[in-house]
Amino acid sequence: MSHIFEFLFGQYKSYETFDVILELIAVVFTIASVIYSKKNSVLVFPTGMICTAIFVYLLLKWGLLGDMIINAYYFIMSIYGWWIWTRKIDDVQVTPISKTSNKDWPFAVLLFVGAVVFIIVIYMIFDKFNTWTAYVDTLTTAIFFVGMWLMAKRKIENWLFWIVGNIITVPLYFYKGLTFSSILYIALTVIAIFGYNAWKKHLNKNLQTV
Image (tube, rainbow, N blue to C red; front, side, top):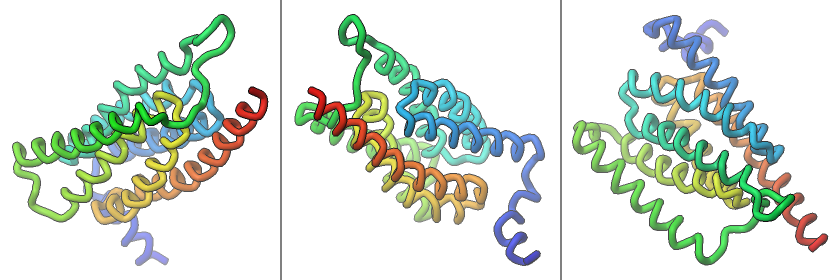
C-alpha cells in the first residue's frame, strides 16, 4: 500500500505546503462549480472564478503554460457567462438552455483553430515543445476553449467537449505528477456525463411545453 501511495503522491514531497493546500482548495471549488453547472445554477461562475484564479497562479508557477492559459480564459469567460446566464431575454425569462445553432458552429471551429495556433505560438516563444505532453496540451486547450464558450452561451453541447477534454486530461495530469488534479478530472468526467443528461432532460421538457 505504501508503494502505491508513494507512486501516486510522492511528487508532492518537493512542493511547498501552501501550494498543495491551494491545489486542494481549487479542486473543491472546481467540483462545486461543475455541480452548479449540472444544476443549471448561475453559481457555476463565482465558484469557477475562485478555482481558476488559484490554478492560474499554480500552473504559471509550475510552468504549465497551456493549462495556465486555459484557466485564465475560463476566468474571463466566467464573467461573460455570468452576464449571459442572468440576462433577461424578455420581462421574466433569462437565457435558456439551447442547442448550438448552425450560426454558432463556424465560430466554434474558428475558436478551436485559433486556440491551437495561439498555444503553439506561446509554446514556441517559451521553447516548450520539448515533450509529447505539449502537443496533447495544445489539443486539450482548444477543446476546453470551445467547451467554455458553449457553456457561457448555455449550449448543451458544451458537456460533450468537457467529457472529451477531461478524458484526455486524466492521464496527462497523472503523467505530469498532478495526482490530485488527475483524480479531479476523473470526477469531472463523471459529473459532466450526468450534467449532459440533466441538461438534455431540461431541454426536452422545455421543448415539449413550447
